[in-house]
Image (cartoon, rainbow, N blue to C red):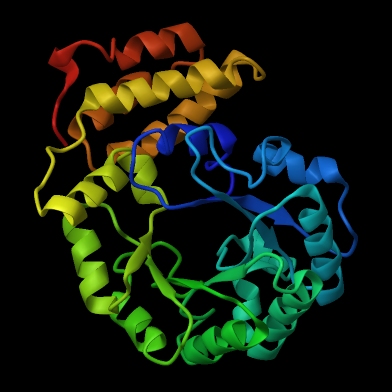
Length: 319
């Protein structure tokens, strides 16, 4: 979720009930200890009261991405000094640039290296704060899926998020939730299912096939900012809330623009809005129509006008 789940987005998505915790975009660790400003740029919530959380009080976990155990340990200690309440290690990023530089999912080719990275971070922070990890089902194939997951657990990870695809599968459907279940059966730590959870039905299928109690939302939360709330309501009552209307999605985009324009040029804000609207349009007819109409607009006020007035009920087109 690099480039899309910044502090503003975390704030907006957690304003309604549903999320237990959130995670930052990754802090890239190469071979040195980063200065405090690098952590605060990705996790400005560290500037607030401890433990760090969104304005709504949802905990924020700081994510590190790297492969050098020594550098990861040094940065884990730095994060601890800054007030991080949890450290998440990213072994799932499929981006070619990240993988070429020995980060993210590239670590899934060698369980021993993954173990060394996790154990170094765990040793650096001890039991002061939890260390968690996120993996995929492998790099090119699934042969090492269980070995890598066990390596994370043996290294000291207290929880493992598993995305139900290999790195080479990218984000091509389907996500193999049943494979997440195979991993869960062999681990003692909690396993969280991730990948292709766009709807209430997807949530139920992911839980059923994986056997996991919890799921992680990524692109699904951007496509439907009300999805976590709808899942939580279904858990509590067994009842389905109506599909999130366009009016609510437009309001989220408008609030996002209002926050971002205080520090960013209008054209950059428009680019970020298009990025988010693009996530919405695949499963929302109204979002797709708005995206088509606005895709060449570069002026912020014109773009916001094209989203429509989110207070108007006539825009509340169901997905």
